[in-house]
Length: 490
Ligand code: FRU
Image (cartoon, rainbow, N blue to C red; front, side):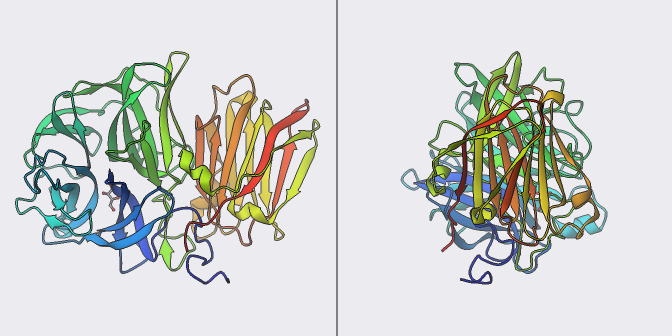
């Protein structure tokens, strides 16, 4: 098949979710229900740039293969449908369904473009809608909005969860420079409980897309709460990014003694990510929007714009006295990787090793090494190159896409070398795992301790990988593999 056929256009992600056509941004309403993972998303069906927002919809049984569904939510007289979440209202607390057929309830932001144009502050409010047919059709609640605007310009992105201990729905919302927590018995009436964050964390831009997640600290019985906050601009490598706080939530308020900024991903292209509600898996599952508001409208695709990150399992680990949030592709993802057998690769000090493979443009690259000074170069016959440099001894990892392919569609896309601090690399061998798709690269170091996600637009498929040993010692890559990854669209 040529590259213009179904899901084979230039730069079309082969194993990531992207809409069939037109504009997409944030993942929304991620909920598991009756064996199905729902993915809703910010969608503008009339253009490949942002516009009046709808909720697009897709479903999956494995978070890998997706079936497209009709648009779930359309704008109405209260406004566009901005980001939000969905829950299974098992006890029918809302009364929208019955005990036998509990409703799916979506909680989203109404954005009133007229109020915005008139220079008002109160143009964002929160609304709800329900579905009694597994998310296929939705009815908006006649009492919308369920939370009116208190005079705050950026007041949006409700993430709702069931809090068993207090037997309440808890909503986390953002309001400009802080998060607000609300409680409810029925998803219709909400009471403001507390706020968090005005003086905490990064504040280079507006807070967006929060998520409050209870997590068991890996290998212990301790429960901590993680608060994800996307922020735009103000990310470590410019533009959009997602920070997190580790703390405690008592059913009313969130508190942390964390003083430093923490980021879930240091690449430029993982934004507005949140986790699934109601999943059977022990670890929360996270999906982010694989783009950045700096250039999301300018990327060189024509039929559609943007994709989602790989679904990732989150783990909270305690390292020395510090809590760190790891994110790593879900286990099930291994089922679409053509598992090869590993070899041990020895690269002498100062030397390099080159591998030529057609597989590289849609691949997993993996190895385990104790080396802390090396360069990985992905390239092709037309001299595009993506440079990934581990400078572990300086506590740094660098991603340079300045010559990775098309970069001139926006000034900042190529000219920043993306930097990631890696202060706590293990002393012994650790895993380096990289996923390359037709327009993205995702790098997971030490099982998701250090992660970078970045879009790339090579002029031709990458077909060469060079590993350069930058240290004065022999570099050993244990279980080195380059594996093809199956495409998910047929
Ligand atoms: C984040 C965001 C949200 C908002 C949505 C609008 O990317 O700005 O805060 O709800 O996108 O599409």
